[in-house]
Amino acid sequence: MKISLKELKEIYKPKLVPLNWDNERNVLVLLDQSALPFEKMFVETRTPEEVADAIRQMKIRGAPAIGIAGAYGMVTALLNSSTLEEALSSLSRAKATLDRARPTAVNLSWATSRMLNVARNAVENGLVKNVRELVDLMKAEAKKIYDEEYEAELQMGLYGLEKVNDGDTILTQCNAGGLATGTGLGTALAPVKIAHALGMKVSVIAPETRPWLQGSRLTVYELMAEGIPVTLIADTAVGLVMYKGMVNSVMVGADRILADGHVFNKIGTFKEAVIAHELGIPFYVLAPTSTFDLKNSVENVVIEERDPNEVRTVRGVPIAPEGAKVYNPVFDVTPPKYVTAIITEKGIIYPPFDKNVRKVVEKKMSSFLAFRHFH
Image 1 (spheres, rainbow, N blue to C red):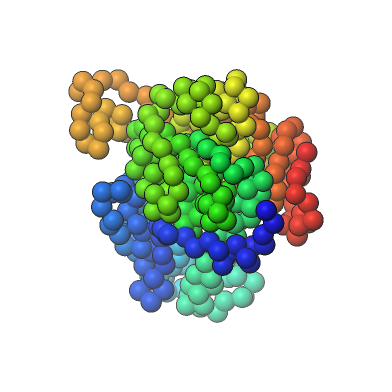
Image 2: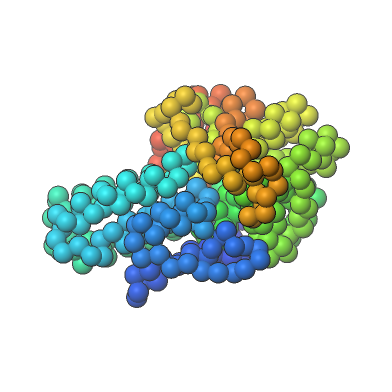
């Protein structure tokens, strides 16, 4: 099915948008995802520290979404500055604070670096005369990051649509929908939502995704809000549902993708990839190019570990002996040999990834408008 981005924007309207910048009050308002689906609460953040805390506490989560939140967190760092020199110092401190909140997801440090570089360039080249002008410039840059993310998701959704057939059931992991990206559309769920909006019959199988249950709490909630059929399963049922032929493809998001095709995503992704590979089921990773890390090797990436009590309990209710030893990594690593293709806003990247990733990521969007695939 052929459809343009302009036509798609008219057809698809997001139902849930998890963050909003209140320009009059200079406040970043976040839908508290840690309370979903039982309560719909909003959190107001006014400082980089408050934004970082919201990211750390999973009130806002998902690599693209925390990147956007980080960009607006940088804006809040300027609001009490009186001179441009003071403003740049505040931005440097804010970047360090925000980056520590979730070290594995590359979008966060990418966004804060971009904001800091824009500010430094503006000040050093005399593009702004005072803090007020710098604040306006930074607000515009944060909005640009948001807009670019939404455009990227629409485009990767269209590319991903090529991998969806009428009647397909797609297995995912965690939540890579609009709640995770900040826009209401998503990465891994973008092709599903677009297919549904275009009248195709598609459904999703969502593993619960322990220990934070993003699959059961967020993916199921989000898809039900859009009227898309979704079936919740226990994490341990993934192998069986694929073995029984209940899955046509796997589509997941990513928190970081390396130049050689190693994919860092929510814990449980590697398991899905291996089983899909063994059973001949296509395994697709969907992420914007801001998620790619072309500098680090797999050994250099820090995998975030969180509080052991997240595993010992379910929403505060103990399920293990007190003091039980726990290993609680948030992400795992999927080697490139298990990845069928990586779908970005610039096209579909196929193996060998160590040759093809850079061809896409390092080129400007305009250079690729005439091409659909990269082999």
